[in-house]
Image (cartoon, rainbow, N blue to C red; front, side):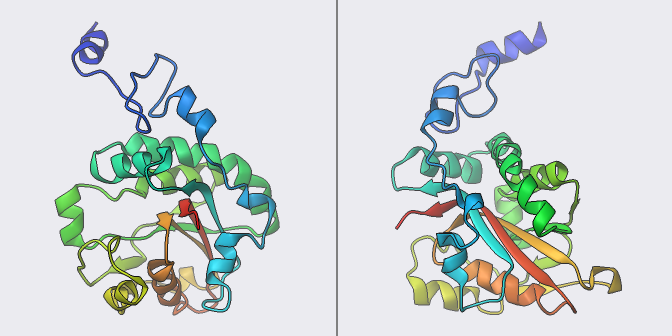
Amino acid sequence: MLKYLINLFFPKLCAGCHALLMTNEIAICTDCRHEMPLTQHHLDPKNDAFNKFYGKIDIEYASAFLYFNKKGIVQELIHNLKYKGYEEAGTVLGYWYVEDLKELNLKIPFDIVIPVPLHQKKFKERGYNQVTTFGRALAEGLDIVYDDSILLRTKYAKTQSKKNLSGRSEGIKNAFDVRYSEANHNKHFLIVDDVITTGSTLEACSRTLQKIPGAKISIVCMAMAHS
């Protein structure tokens, strides 16, 4: 009865199109799921996400689940996840994508999922890290560790979305630090984030994690800006 009343006065809406969700739908409606622009990166190790970082940083693998187009469903979904508290959408995307990544994980097994961190000030402002639910879903689906204590953001910066490439690179310079023990040596870290744009943030995170002896790095994101 209580659940019925809550849904009556506070109906759950789709994170992609704001339509009312049916009783069997979670966070994203069926219509939006069918319209999602899937990248199929998992089928090609040399995909455009991997090529984004090729020659810049040493990584084992990179991919994004969806293509991000301006004014599209994915942009709306990520915006609602990031700023409107639709954290459940990250869980849905994580469990959805992990089915594609399971076979890949047998070939290049990951050890630890690490989210791109927020600065403590930004975390307090927003109340959550928008990639946490996505990362936790991947970790659970792959049966590996999720750890948000190893990679730290030490430099506070305003949003990078409206900066050009040089501005983003400068804004992210020396923004991260790493805390690790001997138990983290020789591990394969899977960094997760929301959207790959210039790649500057993920490059900085990767270089920071590579301070750990024997570290291998891979990157998986919810979406990638479609060029």
